[in-house]
Length: 373
Image (cartoon, rainbow, N blue to C red; front, side):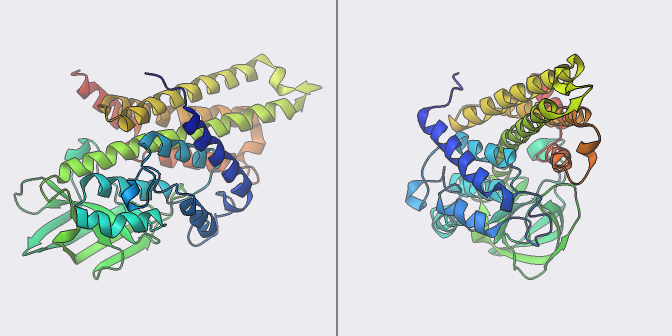
């Protein structure tokens, strides 16, 4: 395994870094904190024009045909620059449709996703048993239609998504325990309610009462719902881990810059051994997080088995990002706890991202199960 970036991957990473840096002042999380959408529509339009969303989608549908790893490099830069956007949810939606959709479904949705159509997903109610988790939404087959009833919680950017990937549990015995469908945001019987959380993805709760979805919106031919759900969770956990590694790197960079400038007793506080130890421990956590996250994304991109690697990456980055934040607050002192400083945005991000696609305890347990322990 060689995780050294290729020339093309370095170009993707460097181009994204320069582009986001030039837009950071007007599109970062602080700038978007009071925006109704929660992200910059102008930046999103530029991102889609540059082909970010379709980077790994097939060229036949307007994508570039690159790999999952290259897409994660973009997510990493979004994390470093603290730029909120529906990029990861939309990419996951495109991936699921590309992998499990019928030719008609691909023709209908993939080109528009490449052009900026936003897709979201409903996080499973519980990840304790991974793809076998219970769903709070019940699906009932009525002829060639599916009726959905129940509640879905913490759906990211649901208010701006055209479609929402929703996993439901069949009300009666079916070939698969779950069914995954693409739900129209404007479907009758669907009610959205915004909720306040520490994250920046503007989640909404969904109430579904007699929502009717055509059978043509089922992904995975109706009998592979658990496979679709497992793929969504795996890709989502991996992309989130890489994005968290990027955010943790930014926190380390901010901390190193601060300790070089902050004077105490006539010299920079970075010259004190205790502060150096804090920065060194942060660097160890960040470098390890990036290595594990890169390895998981690379294996998925190469089509290799990656269940253990994905859970290891998500578990480690969830824990290490919080440790990095704790030490960053130590070295920043009082200024890091004020709203005038950006550090609190990263703290909120660390808390929110650590539970997305399964918190660390879920993944440590999953690793133990995969290893037969």
